[in-house]
Length: 289
Image 1 (tube, rainbow, N blue to C red):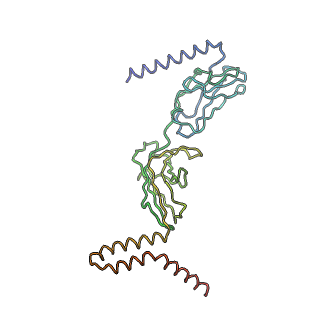
Image 2: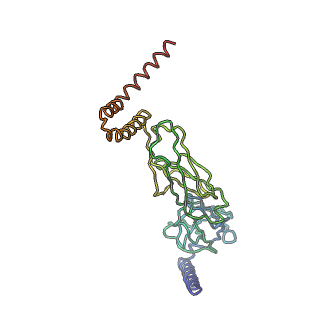
Image 3: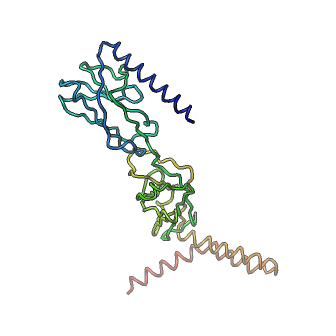
């Protein structure tokens, strides 16, 4: 391990020297600047913010370039003798790397600017998404009933993560609709949809986010999904009666009492008419009163 680390350090030193030689060969068009950052660890989807300073190098207004691993990725026009802040929103995992600052008195194309600044800092992008599983107590729920979702995870949280407030989101068809605070002891949370309607049917997932809030366009990647189906009340009642009929039918078939079974079957098929008739009579009684 020590020999490997020494080799990596040697490679980086060689690259650093090569870049400085490259800058000198460019007729000093590109110069070194300092870089500062309050943190070197940023959550995925968060904001990376660093400060580039030309203080002590020049008193002119220059063009500042933020470099990652020796290649410029952003440019700002820096005012005289002032620090310049670079902000990168919604960073991804591949934004991890060595960051430094350089400047030029001339405006150069970003893809032509290469080099390392006076110093560099390593920015580590940490994962903000924790893989979760979602379970639905009942996949079919009648209109007006409650639907419950349990969200769990088998991924252990480190001490730093468990001390922070973790938010878990219930996602419907790719959009967050509810949020809960994650129980770090039970490693789960429960979402309840009260008195569901037909429009509540859809595909649901759970997402755990660390230190960030969901934003428009965020890729909420989860492989485990559940489908919630909403059944109309009359249809649910019909299916319940039909199941009861079928169960009793098996008993009646053993006793060969087929006439009774057919009578119950006929009642089931016409139950919707009876419920409709009862409803109409109820409305008429209300009007008479």
